[in-house]
Length: 241
Length: 179
Image (cartoon, rainbow over all chains, first blue to last red; front, top):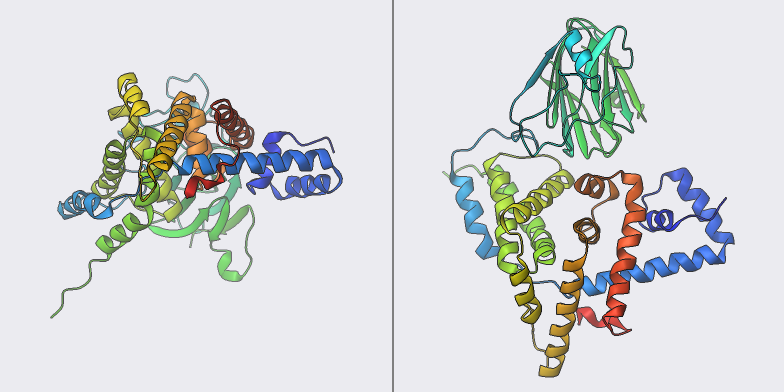
């Protein structure tokens, strides 16, 4: 193995390396005094940063800060929502083949948002089965995603955890919507394919009004397969009840 | 008959008690101004309540920090004049220090503040978010980079920060900072 760079060693210290890379780095460190010294130096640097920043602490006054928030709690409120849900300016509705066209870079139909809080649409690609399916990719950089699908009983659903952007794909007869923190589809037939970005903090799938699956930090924390005792890793496949 | 407990309000209060101190600390470090920091941290919570935002705790924490940082960016850009004023007369909790210790601490705070203010915004955000325990995925989203590049950027930002401390004749044993 070549010597790991400082970024890799930093990620090793922060327990942010994937298991395999963490293992190879660990093995390398056992045999390489130069890299072990660099690791110690990085630890020392982090401690120095921590100590210096501690000087900038100021104690919060919780009781002074609370009344303004409490006042807001007494006002009539909007419905509860996921972060990002209520901030988007409007729903971008795309139907049938238009949705697939919208995914092509440069297309005038490419989905977007009027809200300046929403990040640009990630560079989109065609649906995995571009010939038969259309779909939408997640808009915005929100940490949370809600996938809302209406589909007939018996429709096959595949959910994958992926390294890239989240997406929702279904036959071209489906109707799609994408908003910051939300992907929505109404499908009349299957199969449905849902891709959940591993970088998201949390995502949920709601099928016909029922939450059936959730993902946190790139892992399934509840899914139809969980119930049978088979903890899925990156893919869940089931049929709409 | 006793009225039913208001679970939503109790949850909000619990969230406030668990997250406000860290959020306020982050904002103080970001701005150097306790009043501005309190306003931004409060505003993030007010928007959380007003917009009915909910979700798992880690995601709520990330949301609050992002909103507070945006509030600071939009509403409280620290002007050069204010920054100079703070360098001359920083706000420092003095506690029970002796006068000469208090003076030394004040000077240290001013140096750290100046170094932090002089850093590119991305480096500053990296250092402060990591210090608050955010993982690489959350940091990457905030500064709009790939999670796999956070380690490299963080190591670089930390080294620049400590080099600047050394150039500012920082005492070799800085471990007494919490004293």
